Structure formats: C-alpha cells, structure tokens
Length: 175
Image (cartoon, rainbow, N blue to C red):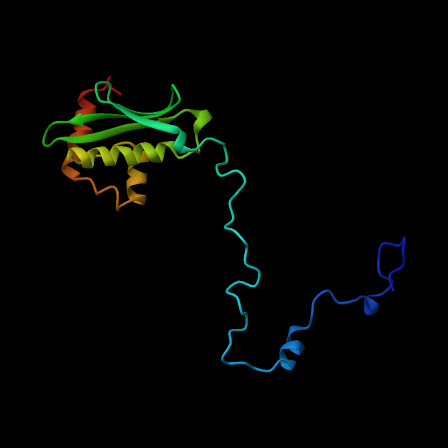
C-alpha cells in the first residue's frame, strides 16, 4: 500500500503494475483470421487533420511575398509589402547562346528561413521556361536548389557555364 506523505511505495512487490501483460491477454483472446487485429486503421484516429498552431516558425509565409523581375537592374526581387526582403542578382548571357545566369542570392537576415530564396530560385527557372532560355547557375544556392529539384531545374549546359564564368571574369565590377 502507498503511504500518504512518504511519496513512495514501501516495497516493489506490492506496487501495482502500470502496463498489462500483453502476452497473457493475447493468449486468452480467440484468434480471428477474418478480422484485422484493430478494427480501425489507427487505434485512436484524430477527428481532424493536425495543423501546427504556428505554421511557419517565424510568422510570415511566402504567400505574403510577391516576386518581381527588374531586368534592367538584373535582379529578381521578393517583396513583403513595399520592402525588398530578398533578391537574386543575375545577368543575361548572349553568347554562345542566350541564358539567364544567377550570380548571388541574398535574403535579408530578418526574413531568413521563410523559403524566400527557394521561391526566388523557383521563379527564376519558371521565368527561363516561359522565355525558352536555359539557366546557367553560378550562384552556389541556386546550384544546390537545382540539384534538389531536378524536375523543375534542368541540368545546365557545361559550355554555357564556362562562357558565363568567362563573362563574369571579364566584368569584375558588375557583381
């Protein structure tokens, strides 16, 4: 018996078990091969799909962000309201073939971790598909993003990558 005020059981042999002996109860139950052991797919189904109370760790989601292309400045920009929260700097390679060449992806520190850089990369590849030109990524983030999303980002042509690197070397003050 538990003694009030002591906070513990006097001995282990009289302490009640907290879990049932499953092997003994299973042995007593008759086998029913025509039925699944649990009548429901999950023993305690949740009445509605679980949604985390805070869907994004930092509050703002990408649905509140708009992406605009400023071709003259060579920037694909993400806006939250009137504020630029991230951008990809790129240039358009003309020779040996026309291509979009992303060089840097930058997201403001207050907006990191919200999927902005990934959305910018996705929009860059969507823009290239709409225009019918390939992407030759020199930006390390876009290279990694493209490797993780091969269905959205076709592999870059090595000849275009070397031409883009040569163009960037010839124009050192541009980026």
